[in-house]
Image 1 (cartoon, rainbow, N blue to C red):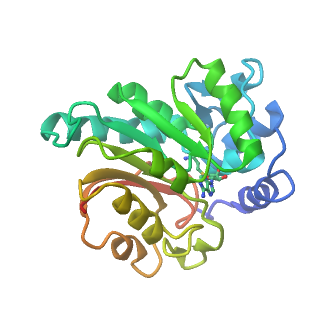
Image 2 (spheres, rainbow, N blue to C red; image 1 turned 60 degrees about the horizontal axis):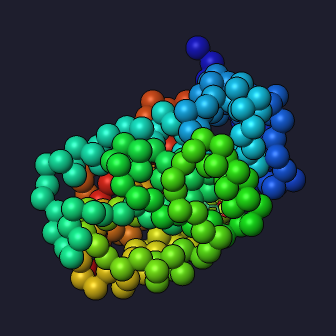
Length: 259
Ligand SMILES: C[S@@+](CC[C@H](N)C(=O)[O-])C[C@H]1O[C@@H](n2cnc3c(N)ncnc32)[C@H](O)[C@@H]1O
């Protein structure tokens, strides 16, 4: 059988990250994105709302966010894995039983939305691009999300969030940009680089361990995931069924980061 042709996906991806980067997509474009990325229009689903229903429900998504987001079918199993972890390990810290979730590069905010709901935790999220922030603000209001959303650099959010519990969880999904290479995803080249983000998190926590949820793809370059998390403990890998060629699909990992 001939290999499926994904050239339309890569051309659409270039459009969404290029000329349509901060354009609100039409219902047709959202459905096309669902089809090209996930195999069917309903595969693009955020906040429990699938692409064909988004526009009628008032959800607005920009081109870049449609490519960069973590959809419901991916975030829900990560939230389940984290919930299992939190019920099987005893938390420690000054507010051990009241941990927070910090979605540091929140984009659509969908990751924080699912983690907050599944774990019944407060969620702090930040987004630096004013256009993304504004669309996300409206979407989160529409779905009645309690996420505390800031137009801020992640370092400023970290400065406002002292460590509470070893169950505090940070979602780390910086833009990939030049990190997305033919040889795979190089996590030392994201913007900012993942090792730098992890150091910033460590510095904000005064030695108290925490959990990290990170999105990668299914092809890692230069062992950069393990190298970025040197000294941390790998807890779980969540690998959704691939819909794109090797090197273009999303995977997720949970780590315990120690001081
Ligand atoms: C890969 S996307 C995150 C996608 C998100 N997890 C979702 O499900 O929609 C990265 C986001 O981080 C934002 N960003 C980039 N640099 C940032 C920074 N220094 N602080 C906060 N947000 C930043 C970008 O504008 C972009 O929307």
